[in-house]
Structure formats: structure tokens, C-alpha cells
Length: 234
Image 1 (cartoon, one colour):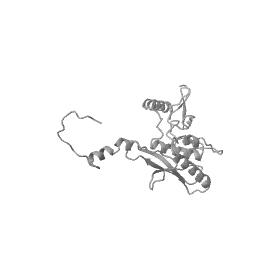
Image 2 (image 1 turned 45 degrees about the vertical axis):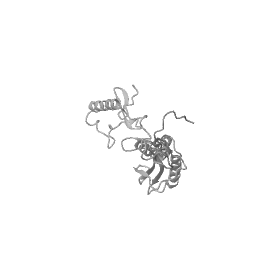
Image 3 (image 1 turned 180 degrees about the vertical axis):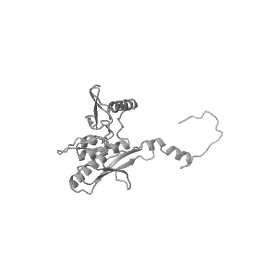
Image 4 (image 1 turned 90 degrees about the horizontal axis):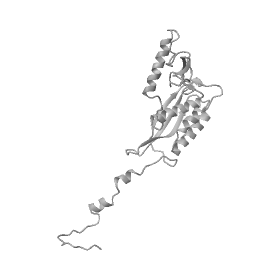
């Protein structure tokens, strides 16, 4: 009970459903916005998903593989908006690998729908080696197997949507690598400085064990990678 010590000069009757009451009862905008939706396996698939398709052509298969990764957009229009992979499909005219490709896509899609950190899939897939040997893709990068190529496509997609950050060279390192490359090519005669077809690195370059790219050459008595800057001499 509150004691009134001053003279009453006016009064007003508060009715139900008045604007003031409705405004007081309405939840704060911040409380609504903070209801963050996380990706989990019980989340229903929307009618439409955003997706990207990657073409993979390797010496191991006659026909190209087309890898499609569809993403779900969570908390659209809020500061918590996230784009996360939801499912993957792999299509090809080549039916030789049909069974294991279907099995692989179902397992990867199930891992995507679990939510959380799915970036570990990249290293797991890239660690698979073909007993018949791997191959070099365009740009001189070594792929130990077709499964590793699928992992490489998933890595590109995760970088595109922001789940993996680009850990490439910074500006200073890129400048240093460019100087090393110019120094190497300038020290060679015209014939030995020929650039390998479509690779962009000198002919005869060796495989770098750090970035798996055929870009390592001998400079000043030390093996140096012209792609990532890796050097045994520090």
C-alpha cells in the first residue's frame, strides 16, 4: 500500500488492452532476436536451398564429376545469420564408382546435418590415398585420390561460405615469394625458364610436401617452394 501525501488533482481509469498495457506486455525486440536457431539433425529441410556445383575432371575417370553442395540459411535477416552446408550430391556419367559415391554422399550429408564444426571432413577425405597412385591437377597441386579431390571441393566451398578462413600467405610473404620466383627465372637461360603448361611454375619443379604443389626448385643451394615459400633453409 502506498500512502498519498499530496493533493489529488486528477485521475484516469486504465482499461484492459490499452496501448500502454500492450506495449508493456510486448517482449523486447532483443529477446526475440536472441532466439538463435542452430543447425541440428531434426531441422526440417526447407523447400529451397542455396547451392554451388563444382566440376571435377581427373585422369582417373573418363567423365567429369559434378559435386553439388546445398546450404541452409539460419537466422536470416538477423545479426546471427549463418550459412551452413546441409547436403551434398555427386553426379557423373561414369557408373563405375556409383555405390561408394552414393554411400559417401549420404554419410557426409548426415554429418552436415549434425551441425557443429564439420571442417574436419576436409582433412579426413584428403588423407585417402589411391593404391594405384595419385595425379596432379591443374595448377600443379597433387591429389592422392579421387576421394581427396572431393575433399578439396568441400574445402573450397567451406572457405566460400566463411566456415574456413583463408590461411594463405600475407602481403609480405607473397612479395617475398614473387621476388624469389623472379630471381630464379632470371638466373636461368631462356630454355630452362620455360613455364610448365597451365601450371604457372618452372618446368622440372618438384613437389612441395607442405602445400602439395609441384613448385619446389633449388635456389642458392636450398630447396624453396615458389607457391607457399616453404624452405629447408628457413
